[in-house]
Image (cartoon, rainbow, N blue to C red):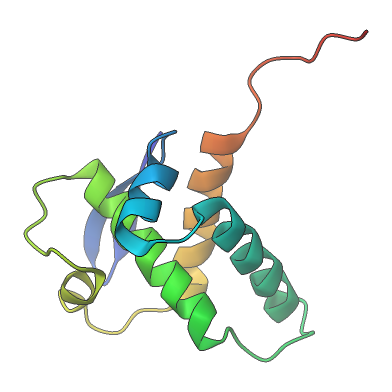
Length: 118
């Protein structure tokens, strides 16, 4: 599944497939599914006013996820790290981009078959 998201006036292509968690684990060394669940839960609390903002770990998860999804969509990206990739943008709101990343992730992880009753 691919999605184009405008970041800092640039159209950036992102991809989420069954391979994405594997790329994440290889590059970051953590479980992407657990990290995304944590991030979605925390983001909901911030949106609902239960918490003030995302913490540093949550921001790191967002940055790593966004970079890996962008790199997955375009393997020829020159930047070899999330830090280098982020340097290509000026300031942008994580709160505008993150819901779009969640939408792409949800499309990739939704169930496509109907379970059979036993």
